[in-house]
Amino acid sequence: MKRAVVLVSGGLDSATTLAMACAEGYQCHALSFRYGQRHAVELEAAERIVRELGAHQHRVLAIDLSAFGGSALTDENLKVPEQPVEGIPITYVPARNTVFLALALAWAEVLEANDVFIGVNAVDYSGYPDCRPEFIRAFERTANVATRAGVEGAGIHIRTPLIDMSKSEIIRRGLALGVDYGMTISCYQPNEEGEACGRCDSCRLRRQGFVDAGAADPTSYTMGSGADPGG
Amino acid sequence: MKRAVVLVSGGLDSATTLAMACAEGYQCHALSFRYGQRHAVELEAAERIVRELGAHQHRVLAIDLSAFGGSALTDENLKVPEQPVEGIPITYVPARNTVFLALALAWAEVLEANDVFIGVNAVDYSGYPDCRPEFIRAFERTANVATRAGVEGAGIHIRTPLIDMSKSEIIRRGLALGVDYGMTISCYQPNEEGEACGRCDSCRLRRQGFVDAGAADPTSYTMGSGADPGG
Image 1 (cartoon, rainbow over the protein chains, first blue to last red):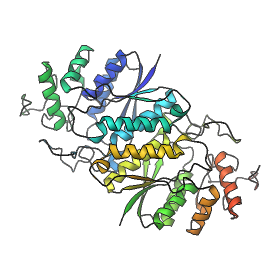
Image 2 (image 1 turned 135 degrees about the horizontal axis):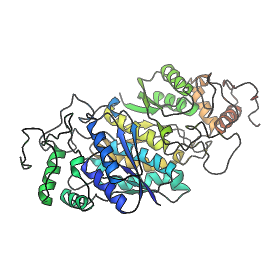
Image 3 (image 1 turned 135 degrees about the vertical axis):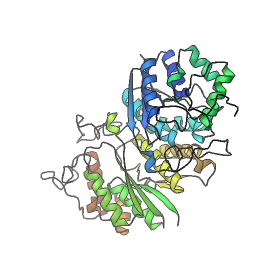
Image 4 (image 1 turned 180 degrees about the vertical axis):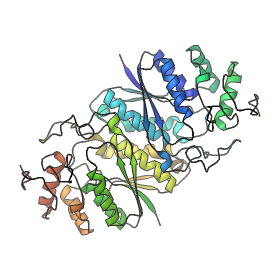
């Protein structure tokens, strides 16, 4: 049975990616990180998703990116923007996907898995450089010169099934595969109960996605954030 | 003052690299990892070296690569070879330099440092794929599409001053810069006192390097490993 490492954050995109990898027949080894993000509720969401979608195993690796700082997602002193911004926003975590893919690559080599799935998307996204196709291509090239798997083995493929899909297309695909999006958390600043703010960039993209998909939005929003994604 | 992140393992190569970066006038931010390596004596060596060479600061990040296994350096059940082997040896740690450079890149972005130094060497080395120039070039390309520093800033340079040098050339350069190699540990299986085995691949390369450099070898070897690097 062909194996894959699948990065699972607890959000909508990575849950859909995991469902797609399972549907392709991979034995899925799910990987999450405790990286200093503000709320552990994301990791609880990841655990539920992995169990529900029937991944083979799930590992949560601790790596303290908050030791470096520089992002509103890992530094409580920096405020998450609630309006669209120009350029790369403060929620960008320096080199996060490079770090996550590097660790996924390490595990893939040990598992003798040739595929690593990551739910990056370059259509309805926050403008992070490490979600773009040119980053993925460069990382894949690096992976294949960096490792025994690349040099002596069958090679490493970085799989990004969502990269060209709109948020509503992602949602429709996931619903067709039976993903329960009520289990997922996309918000950059959820409260301790896992309720979404409804106002950050990630909430805005998610809410609009459900509207465009013509699907019911199962997200729990904090009181007062309202139900209108248009603001 | 221009800043650099310098990866410091506690070994001969990274100590020399740090000395060279300091000599070039960089404010050096040293980074080491507690990655599940067998012996913490390497990290004690890294701390001594960083202090002695006058780096601006030193950070030790914990990241448990032994959770993945697959290497004799992180798995006590796998034996370190004491004779030369064909191909990539079992001491190769899957994707280690990709992981280390990814984390150095994250810190460099936050520090607004444009240079990351790593003491890889592709002449007198153990044959690891992630020590070769093609890996470094691919990673540098990845770094520049992955990050705010690459996309909106002045770019990231992965600096490898040792990559084409022989071990004896590295030793001579370091001695000229005042590096005390008695502080460094290269052995893949040092004992708890930090004494080197004298027999693993890393010890063999180091011992021969001192002979070829015509310099006294300050390494503490365990009793019985003898003084003859030729075996």
